[in-house]
Length: 377
Image (spheres, rainbow, N blue to C red):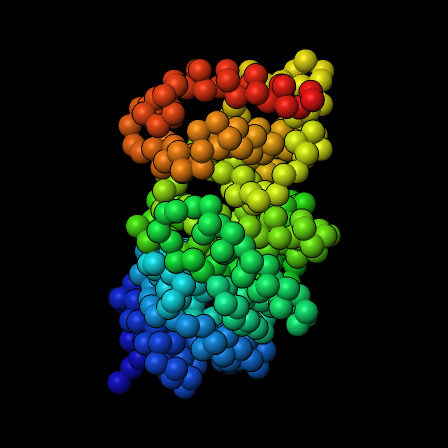
Protein backbone atom coordinates (compact mmCIF):
# COMPACT_ATOMS: atom_id res chain seq x y z
CA UNK A 1 0.00 0.00 0.00
CA UNK A 2 1.35 3.39 -0.96
CA UNK A 3 2.13 5.89 1.78
CA UNK A 4 -0.59 8.48 2.30
CA UNK A 5 0.18 11.79 0.63
CA UNK A 6 1.50 14.48 2.95
CA UNK A 7 -1.13 16.84 1.52
CA UNK A 8 -4.03 14.77 2.86
CA UNK A 9 -5.32 15.55 6.32
CA UNK A 10 -2.22 17.55 7.22
CA UNK A 11 -3.72 19.31 10.23
CA UNK A 12 -5.11 16.06 11.59
CA UNK A 13 -1.81 14.26 11.06
CA UNK A 14 0.15 16.95 12.93
CA UNK A 15 -2.34 17.01 15.80
CA UNK A 16 -2.06 13.24 16.11
CA UNK A 17 1.74 13.47 16.01
CA UNK A 18 1.77 16.03 18.83
CA UNK A 19 -0.67 13.97 20.88
CA UNK A 20 1.63 10.97 20.57
CA UNK A 21 4.63 13.04 21.57
CA UNK A 22 2.77 14.51 24.56
CA UNK A 23 1.85 11.06 25.81
CA UNK A 24 5.48 9.97 25.48
CA UNK A 25 6.70 13.03 27.42
CA UNK A 26 4.32 12.44 30.32
CA UNK A 27 4.91 8.69 30.49
CA UNK A 28 8.69 8.87 30.08
CA UNK A 29 8.59 6.82 26.88
CA UNK A 30 11.93 7.72 25.29
CA UNK A 31 11.51 5.44 22.27
CA UNK A 32 7.99 6.78 21.69
CA UNK A 33 9.25 10.35 21.85
CA UNK A 34 12.12 9.73 19.43
CA UNK A 35 9.67 8.07 17.04
CA UNK A 36 7.95 11.46 16.64
CA UNK A 37 11.06 13.43 15.67
CA UNK A 38 13.40 13.52 12.70
CA UNK A 39 16.65 11.78 13.70
CA UNK A 40 18.10 11.44 10.19
CA UNK A 41 20.94 13.85 10.97
CA UNK A 42 23.16 12.70 13.88
CA UNK A 43 23.36 16.22 15.32
CA UNK A 44 19.58 16.55 15.24
CA UNK A 45 19.22 13.12 16.83
CA UNK A 46 21.52 14.16 19.68
CA UNK A 47 19.50 17.36 20.10
CA UNK A 48 16.21 15.48 20.36
CA UNK A 49 17.65 13.03 22.90
CA UNK A 50 18.88 15.95 25.00
CA UNK A 51 15.47 17.68 24.84
CA UNK A 52 13.74 14.51 26.03
CA UNK A 53 16.22 14.14 28.90
CA UNK A 54 15.61 17.78 29.86
CA UNK A 55 11.85 17.31 29.87
CA UNK A 56 12.16 14.23 32.05
CA UNK A 57 13.88 16.37 34.70
CA UNK A 58 10.84 18.62 34.99
CA UNK A 59 8.01 17.84 37.46
CA UNK A 60 5.50 17.92 34.63
CA UNK A 61 1.87 17.53 35.65
CA UNK A 62 0.52 18.56 32.25
CA UNK A 63 1.88 18.74 28.71
CA UNK A 64 -0.15 19.13 25.53
CA UNK A 65 -0.27 20.96 22.21
CA UNK A 66 -3.24 22.45 20.36
CA UNK A 67 -2.62 22.94 16.65
CA UNK A 68 -3.60 26.38 15.38
CA UNK A 69 -2.27 26.39 11.80
CA UNK A 70 -0.19 24.18 9.51
CA UNK A 71 1.34 25.29 6.23
CA UNK A 72 3.52 23.63 3.64
CA UNK A 73 7.00 25.18 3.30
CA UNK A 74 8.45 22.78 0.73
CA UNK A 75 7.93 19.50 -1.07
CA UNK A 76 8.57 17.49 2.09
CA UNK A 77 8.46 20.21 4.74
CA UNK A 78 5.82 22.05 6.71
CA UNK A 79 5.54 24.30 9.74
CA UNK A 80 2.89 24.20 12.44
CA UNK A 81 1.93 26.91 14.91
CA UNK A 82 0.61 25.31 18.07
CA UNK A 83 -0.24 26.34 21.61
CA UNK A 84 1.84 24.49 24.18
CA UNK A 85 0.25 24.05 27.60
CA UNK A 86 2.44 22.77 30.40
CA UNK A 87 2.17 22.79 34.17
CA UNK A 88 4.87 22.12 36.75
CA UNK A 89 3.44 20.14 39.64
CA UNK A 90 3.80 21.92 42.97
CA UNK A 91 4.72 25.25 41.36
CA UNK A 92 1.97 26.30 38.96
CA UNK A 93 -1.66 27.07 39.83
CA UNK A 94 -2.62 26.33 36.26
CA UNK A 95 -1.07 25.53 32.89
CA UNK A 96 1.31 27.95 31.23
CA UNK A 97 0.61 28.57 27.56
CA UNK A 98 3.01 29.63 24.82
CA UNK A 99 2.97 29.70 21.04
CA UNK A 100 5.35 27.32 19.30
CA UNK A 101 6.61 27.32 15.72
CA UNK A 102 7.24 23.67 14.93
CA UNK A 103 9.08 22.63 11.73
CA UNK A 104 8.12 19.26 10.26
CA UNK A 105 9.63 16.89 7.73
CA UNK A 106 7.96 14.16 5.66
CA UNK A 107 9.94 10.95 6.04
CA UNK A 108 9.15 7.27 5.55
CA UNK A 109 5.48 7.91 4.84
CA UNK A 110 4.68 10.25 7.75
CA UNK A 111 5.40 13.59 9.34
CA UNK A 112 7.99 14.05 12.07
CA UNK A 113 9.06 17.07 14.10
CA UNK A 114 12.39 18.59 13.04
CA UNK A 115 14.91 20.54 15.11
CA UNK A 116 14.18 24.27 15.12
CA UNK A 117 16.24 26.31 12.70
CA UNK A 118 18.06 29.50 13.80
CA UNK A 119 15.58 32.35 14.18
CA UNK A 120 12.80 30.20 15.61
CA UNK A 121 12.47 30.87 19.37
CA UNK A 122 13.37 27.91 21.57
CA UNK A 123 12.22 26.98 25.04
CA UNK A 124 14.91 26.65 27.72
CA UNK A 125 14.90 22.86 27.44
CA UNK A 126 15.76 23.23 23.73
CA UNK A 127 18.76 25.52 24.34
CA UNK A 128 21.20 22.94 25.70
CA UNK A 129 21.68 20.58 28.62
CA UNK A 130 19.35 21.81 31.34
CA UNK A 131 20.17 21.63 35.05
CA UNK A 132 17.52 21.59 37.75
CA UNK A 133 18.20 23.00 41.23
CA UNK A 134 15.52 22.71 43.89
CA UNK A 135 15.42 25.20 46.73
CA UNK A 136 13.11 25.31 49.70
CA UNK A 137 10.75 27.70 47.87
CA UNK A 138 12.19 27.63 44.37
CA UNK A 139 12.86 25.64 41.25
CA UNK A 140 15.83 26.94 39.25
CA UNK A 141 16.26 25.73 35.66
CA UNK A 142 19.49 26.68 33.95
CA UNK A 143 21.51 26.05 30.80
CA UNK A 144 25.23 26.76 30.64
CA UNK A 145 25.49 28.21 34.14
CA UNK A 146 28.15 26.96 36.61
CA UNK A 147 27.20 25.21 39.83
CA UNK A 148 27.91 28.20 42.07
CA UNK A 149 25.60 30.43 40.03
CA UNK A 150 22.84 27.82 40.11
CA UNK A 151 23.12 27.54 43.88
CA UNK A 152 23.18 31.33 44.28
CA UNK A 153 19.99 31.74 42.22
CA UNK A 154 18.24 29.17 44.40
CA UNK A 155 19.39 30.93 47.59
CA UNK A 156 18.24 34.31 46.30
CA UNK A 157 14.85 32.95 45.28
CA UNK A 158 14.46 31.16 48.62
CA UNK A 159 15.09 34.44 50.44
CA UNK A 160 12.75 36.36 48.16
CA UNK A 161 9.68 34.17 48.66
CA UNK A 162 9.18 34.70 52.43
CA UNK A 163 9.97 38.40 52.07
CA UNK A 164 7.25 38.75 49.48
CA UNK A 165 4.84 36.57 51.45
CA UNK A 166 5.28 38.86 54.48
CA UNK A 167 4.32 41.91 52.40
CA UNK A 168 1.61 40.50 50.12
CA UNK A 169 -1.32 38.81 51.92
CA UNK A 170 -2.96 37.52 48.77
CA UNK A 171 -3.11 33.83 47.84
CA UNK A 172 -0.24 32.48 45.74
CA UNK A 173 1.86 29.33 45.61
CA UNK A 174 4.71 30.86 47.67
CA UNK A 175 7.08 29.23 45.23
CA UNK A 176 8.94 30.64 42.27
CA UNK A 177 10.36 29.16 39.08
CA UNK A 178 13.56 30.81 37.85
CA UNK A 179 14.98 30.34 34.35
CA UNK A 180 18.69 30.98 33.92
CA UNK A 181 19.68 30.80 30.23
CA UNK A 182 23.28 30.92 29.05
CA UNK A 183 23.21 34.37 27.43
CA UNK A 184 21.19 37.48 26.72
CA UNK A 185 20.13 36.21 23.25
CA UNK A 186 18.92 33.00 24.86
CA UNK A 187 16.97 35.01 27.46
CA UNK A 188 15.41 37.08 24.66
CA UNK A 189 14.21 33.86 23.01
CA UNK A 190 12.34 32.95 26.19
CA UNK A 191 10.76 36.40 26.28
CA UNK A 192 9.91 36.44 22.56
CA UNK A 193 11.81 39.68 21.98
CA UNK A 194 15.07 41.02 20.62
CA UNK A 195 18.25 41.04 22.75
CA UNK A 196 18.49 44.83 22.40
CA UNK A 197 15.15 45.19 24.18
CA UNK A 198 16.53 43.55 27.34
CA UNK A 199 20.05 44.95 27.27
CA UNK A 200 20.93 46.02 30.81
CA UNK A 201 17.73 44.48 32.28
CA UNK A 202 18.78 42.01 35.00
CA UNK A 203 15.61 39.92 35.08
CA UNK A 204 12.05 39.91 33.73
CA UNK A 205 8.93 38.08 34.84
CA UNK A 206 7.52 36.19 31.88
CA UNK A 207 3.83 36.08 32.59
CA UNK A 208 0.25 35.83 31.45
CA UNK A 209 -1.38 38.72 33.33
CA UNK A 210 -4.98 37.70 32.72
CA UNK A 211 -4.57 33.94 32.96
CA UNK A 212 -6.98 32.15 35.29
CA UNK A 213 -4.14 30.18 36.82
CA UNK A 214 -0.91 32.19 36.74
CA UNK A 215 2.25 30.24 35.91
CA UNK A 216 4.96 32.88 35.88
CA UNK A 217 8.66 32.43 35.25
CA UNK A 218 11.46 34.73 36.38
CA UNK A 219 13.87 34.93 33.44
CA UNK A 220 17.39 36.04 34.41
CA UNK A 221 19.60 37.89 31.95
CA UNK A 222 23.03 36.56 33.01
CA UNK A 223 24.91 39.43 31.38
CA UNK A 224 23.19 42.12 33.48
CA UNK A 225 22.36 40.09 36.59
CA UNK A 226 25.98 39.01 36.92
CA UNK A 227 27.18 42.61 37.18
CA UNK A 228 25.14 43.25 40.34
CA UNK A 229 26.43 42.91 43.88
CA UNK A 230 24.71 40.62 46.39
CA UNK A 231 22.27 43.31 47.53
CA UNK A 232 21.38 44.20 43.95
CA UNK A 233 20.74 40.59 42.97
CA UNK A 234 18.53 40.03 46.01
CA UNK A 235 16.58 43.20 45.30
CA UNK A 236 15.99 42.16 41.69
CA UNK A 237 14.95 38.62 42.64
CA UNK A 238 12.55 39.89 45.30
CA UNK A 239 11.08 42.42 42.87
CA UNK A 240 10.42 39.75 40.24
CA UNK A 241 9.04 37.34 42.84
CA UNK A 242 6.62 40.08 43.91
CA UNK A 243 5.28 40.10 40.35
CA UNK A 244 4.70 36.35 40.61
CA UNK A 245 2.83 36.80 43.91
CA UNK A 246 0.62 39.64 42.71
CA UNK A 247 -0.13 38.24 39.25
CA UNK A 248 -3.64 37.03 40.11
CA UNK A 249 -4.53 40.59 41.21
CA UNK A 250 -2.85 42.24 38.21
CA UNK A 251 -5.07 43.00 35.22
CA UNK A 252 -5.05 45.16 32.11
CA UNK A 253 -6.49 47.94 34.29
CA UNK A 254 -3.58 47.94 36.76
CA UNK A 255 -1.30 50.92 35.96
CA UNK A 256 2.28 49.85 35.30
CA UNK A 257 3.54 52.41 37.83
CA UNK A 258 1.49 50.64 40.51
CA UNK A 259 2.59 47.14 39.47
CA UNK A 260 6.27 48.07 39.24
CA UNK A 261 6.09 50.39 42.22
CA UNK A 262 4.59 47.75 44.48
CA UNK A 263 7.23 45.23 43.39
CA UNK A 264 9.97 47.76 44.19
CA UNK A 265 8.35 48.65 47.52
CA UNK A 266 8.27 44.96 48.49
CA UNK A 267 11.89 44.52 47.35
CA UNK A 268 13.03 47.43 49.55
CA UNK A 269 10.66 46.67 52.45
CA UNK A 270 12.47 46.16 55.74
CA UNK A 271 15.32 48.36 54.58
CA UNK A 272 15.28 52.14 54.66
CA UNK A 273 17.40 53.32 51.74
CA UNK A 274 18.01 57.04 51.57
CA UNK A 275 15.43 58.22 49.07
CA UNK A 276 17.78 60.91 47.75
CA UNK A 277 20.30 58.23 46.75
CA UNK A 278 17.80 55.52 45.80
CA UNK A 279 15.90 57.82 43.41
CA UNK A 280 18.69 59.86 41.79
CA UNK A 281 16.96 60.51 38.47
CA UNK A 282 13.77 61.75 40.06
CA UNK A 283 15.75 63.82 42.58
CA UNK A 284 17.69 65.51 39.79
CA UNK A 285 14.40 66.40 38.11
CA UNK A 286 13.01 67.72 41.42
CA UNK A 287 16.06 69.86 42.14
CA UNK A 288 15.84 71.31 38.64
CA UNK A 289 12.18 72.18 39.17
CA UNK A 290 11.02 69.52 36.69
CA UNK A 291 9.32 67.01 38.99
CA UNK A 292 6.63 65.30 36.88
CA UNK A 293 3.11 66.67 37.26
CA UNK A 294 1.64 63.18 36.90
CA UNK A 295 2.44 59.63 37.73
CA UNK A 296 4.18 57.65 34.94
CA UNK A 297 2.20 56.32 32.01
CA UNK A 298 2.55 52.73 30.84
CA UNK A 299 4.57 53.98 27.85
CA UNK A 300 7.19 55.43 30.22
CA UNK A 301 8.17 51.87 31.17
CA UNK A 302 9.28 50.78 27.70
CA UNK A 303 12.56 48.87 27.98
CA UNK A 304 13.71 50.11 24.58
CA UNK A 305 12.92 53.77 25.28
CA UNK A 306 14.85 56.55 27.03
CA UNK A 307 16.81 54.93 29.92
CA UNK A 308 16.54 58.07 32.07
CA UNK A 309 12.78 58.20 31.55
CA UNK A 310 12.53 54.54 32.44
CA UNK A 311 14.58 55.06 35.63
CA UNK A 312 12.40 58.02 36.67
CA UNK A 313 9.27 55.98 36.04
CA UNK A 314 10.45 53.16 38.31
CA UNK A 315 11.51 55.60 41.01
CA UNK A 316 8.19 57.43 40.86
CA UNK A 317 6.18 54.22 41.12
CA UNK A 318 8.25 53.02 44.08
CA UNK A 319 7.88 56.32 45.93
CA UNK A 320 4.13 56.42 45.28
CA UNK A 321 3.75 53.00 46.89
CA UNK A 322 6.11 53.87 49.73
CA UNK A 323 4.14 57.05 50.42
CA UNK A 324 0.84 55.13 50.32
CA UNK A 325 2.14 52.55 52.81
CA UNK A 326 3.45 55.27 55.13
CA UNK A 327 0.24 57.30 55.06
CA UNK A 328 -2.45 54.60 54.98
CA UNK A 329 -0.63 51.42 56.01
CA UNK A 330 0.50 48.29 54.21
CA UNK A 331 -2.88 46.55 54.35
CA UNK A 332 -4.58 49.42 52.56
CA UNK A 333 -1.81 49.55 49.96
CA UNK A 334 -2.58 45.90 49.12
CA UNK A 335 -6.33 46.66 49.00
CA UNK A 336 -5.67 49.66 46.76
CA UNK A 337 -3.64 47.47 44.40
CA UNK A 338 -6.45 44.91 44.08
CA UNK A 339 -9.10 47.60 43.64
CA UNK A 340 -7.11 49.38 40.91
CA UNK A 341 -7.13 46.20 38.82
CA UNK A 342 -10.89 45.77 38.80
CA UNK A 343 -12.65 46.22 35.46
CA UNK A 344 -14.53 49.35 34.53
CA UNK A 345 -13.74 52.94 33.55
CA UNK A 346 -11.79 55.08 35.98
CA UNK A 347 -10.51 52.09 37.93
CA UNK A 348 -7.66 54.00 39.59
CA UNK A 349 -9.85 56.94 40.58
CA UNK A 350 -12.48 54.59 41.97
CA UNK A 351 -9.86 52.58 43.87
CA UNK A 352 -8.37 55.74 45.41
CA UNK A 353 -11.81 56.95 46.51
CA UNK A 354 -12.99 53.59 47.86
CA UNK A 355 -9.81 52.52 49.65
CA UNK A 356 -7.90 55.73 50.45
CA UNK A 357 -10.65 58.33 50.65
CA UNK A 358 -9.15 60.63 48.01
CA UNK A 359 -9.70 60.87 44.28
CA UNK A 360 -6.98 60.26 41.70
CA UNK A 361 -6.24 63.98 41.30
CA UNK A 362 -5.81 64.44 45.06
CA UNK A 363 -3.70 61.28 45.29
CA UNK A 364 -1.33 62.55 42.61
CA UNK A 365 -1.07 66.04 44.12
CA UNK A 366 -0.33 64.69 47.60
CA UNK A 367 2.24 62.23 46.20
CA UNK A 368 3.96 65.03 44.30
CA UNK A 369 4.24 67.28 47.35
CA UNK A 370 5.53 64.41 49.54
CA UNK A 371 8.04 63.39 46.87
CA UNK A 372 9.33 66.92 46.36
CA UNK A 373 9.80 67.36 50.11
CA UNK A 374 11.56 64.02 50.63
CA UNK A 375 13.86 64.39 47.65
CA UNK A 376 14.89 67.88 48.72
CA UNK A 377 15.63 66.97 52.38
